[in-house]
Each structure stands twice: as structure tokens, then as C-alpha cells.
Length: 474
Ligand SMILES: Cc1cc2nc3c(=O)[nH]c(=O)nc-3n(C[C@H](O)[C@H](O)[C@H](O)COP(=O)(O)OP(=O)(O)OC[C@H]3O[C@@H](n4cnc5c(N)ncnc54)[C@H](O)[C@@H]3O)c2cc1C
Ligand SMILES: *[C@@H]1O[C@H](CO)[C@@H](O)[C@H](O)[C@H]1NC(C)=O
Ligand SMILES: *[C@@H]1O[C@H](CO)[C@@H](O)[C@H](O)[C@H]1NC(C)=O
Ligand SMILES: *[C@@H]1O[C@H](CO)[C@@H](O)[C@H](O)[C@H]1NC(C)=O
Ligand SMILES: *[C@@H]1O[C@H](CO)[C@@H](O)[C@H](O)[C@H]1NC(C)=O
Image (cartoon, rainbow, N blue to C red):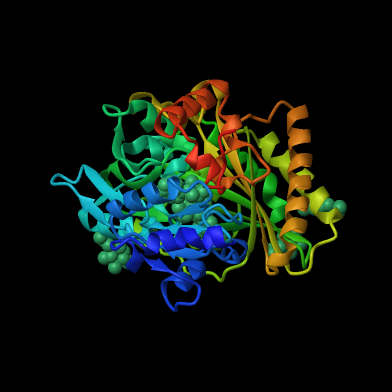
């Protein structure tokens, strides 16, 4: 492995970079980075060193060095919330931890916000709430700017602005050789578009200029319902998600949760309304179903996104997209119940959850005037639900077993929904398992345009060959 630690030695040999490189033997930054990953699997990989730039120029210098040594493997980390091992960390390689690139700067009239790619969304909202403006970003404040935007980004504001990436005015990007460019509708529009869904295939984004909008307090919190009332809840949510005139202030996440220890189901919803109204009309049918928990309240983004931290656990994510109908919700529930009841549960298995998030046409039409994206989601696909299947487990060694069961669960769900004409093609990369092919799900034309941008901006395929983590252009 001499060649590998040589990559760290190359960075250490640079006068400007050496103070930013930390080795496993040092106390401090190296271990802080590993501790900051959301999942236990990702935290268990041991990089040869962690490189923690504090300025975009450091990223540029480092990429010039690493890309000229083709046996150097590296990973790009923002806030480390992708659960799969190796997405933002790399065993025996160089993990670039961008979390010090976390500045949040608001322009004079607060219409554009420049955010460092390593900021967390909480850091962004804490600054923006004081200006009474918001941007489309992660709902959980611990998520990073970089990963969320490059995969698309589902926010509370989707029906108003589209994917979070659709509200990007420009990206600052360091290309493979170390050159820094601005990508926007005016400059390098091909790169700009490809970044919006293209993940880490094209460059290291160091900052993004986001279009903001005035925003006051919101309605947020959790509702729970008895599982025996599920059809009434499913109907209320399917009607909301498929409404002809979708209320663009409304968002909701519906979760059906299976406890492996009690083998029972719970039903919970997070209805967030982006106006300070306690009883928005759009949720009336849902609120009419008797609830078992109600923590709805008026709050603000920076308070609500500041969720209490949870310990590093094993997590598997899997995704699919389905028609926004009650039949989808009932079918997925029945298949999940049948499948999960039949599993021999791995030791330390804590939770199976299937979450449904509306993707209405009002959301997918927003990309039109903003330079587009490569996600391939469009109004002609109809109203949909994006599903995030997540499995939580205490023992990270169970990863392969849980992943296998997750795959079986999703296979059963997809077989039954396909038969009924409910299965859509799109796979959201930020919720996808490594065995899925979200980039392929964008469609051939979009894949081609990412490929053309890659050829032009990274002719040596550094981001495919030297950055093993994430979904790769193939
Ligand atoms: C608790 C939780 C809540 C979530 N909530 C939401 C939500 O509300 N909406 C939503 O859409 N998704 C959500 N997600 C999914 C989330 O968008 C993805 O996990 C996302 O990849 C995390 O981004 P990150 O920067 O924190 O992750 P990281 O693990 O740091 O990065 C993810 C991927 O992006 C690449 N990457 C990151 N930054 C850069 C960069 N600057 N340049 C190039 N490549 C980069 C990395 O190499 C890696 O492959 C959530 C996930 C979790 C765990
Ligand atoms: C957000 O809410 C918190 C808690 O209620 C409050 O302390 C804070 O002042 C609010 N921020 C703004 C900008 O209103
Ligand atoms: C859910 O409803 C069933 C009857 O439909 C009832 O037996 C059960 O106690 C209820 N559970 C809770 C937690 O209220
Ligand atoms: C939840 O149930 C309680 C008790 O019945 C009720 O007072 C409350 O209004 C319900 N919440 C919603 C959002 O409808
Ligand atoms: C789940 O399936 C079991 C049979 O395996 C059945 O007895 C049970 O009623 C189902 N649960 C629900 C909530 O439908």
C-alpha cells in the first residue's frame, strides 16, 4: 500500500496543504471526520488521511496533485449523510472533507445566497431565518449542501421551486486538473445542467449561489395514526398528492414503519405547510382521521431543522417512484407487510420504514426556466410518490444481510406495482442503494448529456477512475 500513503505524502509535501492533512495517528480532525458520518458503515472505512480544505483554492491545488497521480484514490465528503459505505469516504485513500467550506453569505437585497458546499442546511437556515428568507434545501439540518444539490434535492418548497438544484443560480466548481470555473445558465451551461443530478461525476463543487425567497414561519410536526385507519390516511394523502391544483405551500411525508421486535406497524406523517397556518384546508381530510400523536406547531426552519442527533447506526436506503394513487399506498403496504412478516429478522434489526413523498407535476415543471437538470423528471410522467425505503440496524456487520432483504422487499414491491401500471422509471439518487442505477433512470438523452459534459470537463475520467464513491457514469 506504499502507493496509497504516497498520495497523502504528496499533499503533505505542499507548503499550503500540509496543515490541512490529518493522519490516523493524529488526534483531532481525522477522527472528527469519521465521527461525523451519519452511518456506521461509512464511518468504519479508514482513509489513509483526511484532507480538510478551508478555501476553494486548497481544493484546486489538491486536485491538480491527485489527478496527476492516477493511482491516488479519493473521496469527496460534504456532510456525510449518504449512508452507503464508500460514497463519501475511501479506505486507504484520501478523504476530502469539505465541511470547513461552510460560509453563508447573503447579497444586498437577500435575493441570492452563496453557500459553501460543505455547509449543513442547518447552518444555512440559521443565517437565513434572521433575514426572513429561505432557500430550497434539506429538511433535516444535518444534511450537506453538496450531496443534496448534486443529487436533486427534495425540500419543503418543491412545488414552489422544483428540485433544490433548480434554484441554483450558479456553482463554483473545481475541475479534475485543478481549474476553477463558474457554471451557470450563462457560463458553461452544459456543465451547469449536468451537475444538477450528475452527482460527483464532473468536479468538486466548492460553493453554490442559491435563489432565495421571502419566508416566515411554518407549520411543522408529526402526526400518527392507528394502522387500522390506514386506508383513510392513504386516501387523504393520495388526494393531496394528485390534486389538480396542488397547493404549493403543502408538503408531506407519509411513513409506514415496521417494528421487527413487536412485528407491528405504525403510521406517521410529517405535514409541513410553508405558511404560518395551524389548520391549512389542504390537510382537512387527513386531520379528520382520529390521530394518536399530534405535535404540529408553528415554528421556523432553523428551529425545526435542528433535530436532535442520533447515534451512528447501520442504514440501508432503497428507492422507487410510483403513481400518486391510493392503490400505490395500499399495494406497497400489503406487499411490505407480507414480505417483512416472512423475513427472519437479522440480529440488531431496529426498524423498517417505507416513506412516501409527493412529486407532483407542479414540482417537476419548475426546471423549465432555470437551465434545466438531467434528472429526467417531467410533468408528462404525472403526479408521483418518491419512496424512500430505509432499514435501520444496530450491528454494522449485518449490512450485507440487510441489503439483501431490502433488495427482496423492493423487488416484491416493484413486481406488484409494475403489474398494476403504478411503477415509474425514476430512481432518486439521494435515496438509492448502490445496487440501483439512478443515473440510468434519467433516460438515454440525459445520460448522454452528462457523458458529453464529462468528456469535455474531465477528459481523463478522473471522477470515475479515482473517485470510486457514488453513482458513476458508466
Ligand atoms: C437524516 C437524513 C435526512 C435527509 N433528508 C433529505 C431531504 O430532506 N431531502 C433530500 O433530498 N434528501 C435528503 N436526504 C438524502 C440526502 O440528500 C443524501 O444523503 C445526500 O447525498 C447527503 O448529502 P451530504 O452532502 O450530506 O452527503 P455526503 O455523504 O457528504 O455526499 C453524498 C455524495 O455527494 C458527493 N458530494 C458531496 N458534496 C460534493 C461536492 N461538493 N462536490 C462533488 N461531489 C460531492 C459525495 O462524493 C457523495 O458521493 C437525507 C438523508 C438523511 C440521512
Ligand atoms: C425561530 O424560532 C426560535 C424558537 O422559537 C426563536 O428563538 C427564534 O428567534 C426564531 N427565529 C426567527 C428569526 O424568528
Ligand atoms: C388501534 O385500533 C384497534 C381497533 O381497530 C385497537 O384494537 C387498538 O387498540 C388501537 N391501537 C391504538 C394504539 O390505539
Ligand atoms: C389530533 O387529535 C386530537 C385529540 O383528538 C385533536 O384535538 C387534534 O385536533 C388532532 N390533530 C389534528 C391535526 O387534527
Ligand atoms: C400483515 O400480515 C399478517 C399475515 O402475515 C396479517 O395477519 C396482518 O393482519 C397484516 N397486518 C396488517 C396491518 O394488515
